[in-house]
Image (cartoon, rainbow, N blue to C red; front, side, top):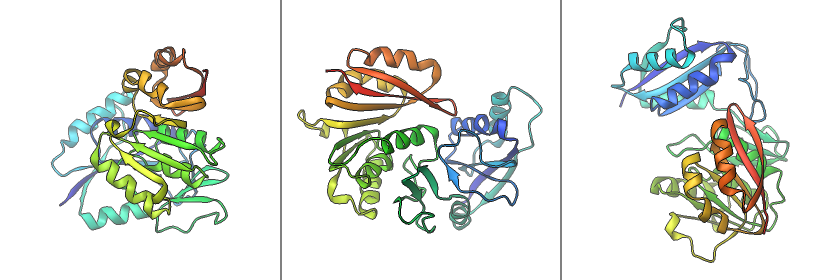
Amino acid sequence: MPWLLIKFSLPRAHVASVADALEACDALSVTVESASDEQRLQSALEETPLWNENRVVGLFPEHTDSEAVLDAVRAALNTSNIPRGEVSQLDDADWARAWMANYRPLQISPRLWICPSWCAPPDPSAVNLHLDPGLAFGTGTHPTTALCLRWLSEQPCAGKTVIDYGCGSGIVAIAALMLGAARAIGVDVDPQALAVSRENAARNGVGERYRACAPHGLGPEERADLLVANILAGTLIALAAEIAQRVKPGGHVALSGILPEQAEEVRRRYASDFALQSNEQEGWILLAGQRLH
């Protein structure tokens, strides 16, 4: 099956806006790559694009209206003077090779890396989570996921129980297990995400300590020392009571997928149960804190 690639060469100031516009147009994937020969390892701690010259690439189904995508990018930049988008087709094999060429190891913290299976870990002594790009959301490159992983890497995970709401690929729960958590539960409404997360947990050698289930699969007694919910603000608000009661007294929560203008409303919904502090990366907010009682 052929696919449609739409590429933009951009200065770093416009990369985030164009990437968000491509995602809003239902791109199957969006990648940022170097538009020159400059090579660097990608770090989730960097809040700006990684190269002086950047190329943003959106992958779409073959029959996508490319002009509509170009209009969306133009609107996102609020200008008619945008770099010309390069539209091309590629087959499945070329798509796979493109991913392998552009998806590099991602450093979350000094002790945690996300590595594709075809790359040698840059730091063999670190915790190296192996995860390849796939259909389920969550490879660590999106700011909401990077915020969760960075927060998690700063927590004392040893021996803890972790619940990962909106688990997607399972990346957060798997990272927690590799950082020493005793067990982790991934929760998602998408059966495909649950299946992929189980596969990824097994690939990283933590499958026996990982369980994936739909929300109704959580027993009423199941509570976490650390709960991460990387979903959307509206869902976080709707699930506030459910999420709060899933955190043990003295436990911690991290809420992600929040835009700056949504943060205060989310904070208010959780204020009776948690003292929340905010972290920001590339226009996204993570609210995290300890249960008050």
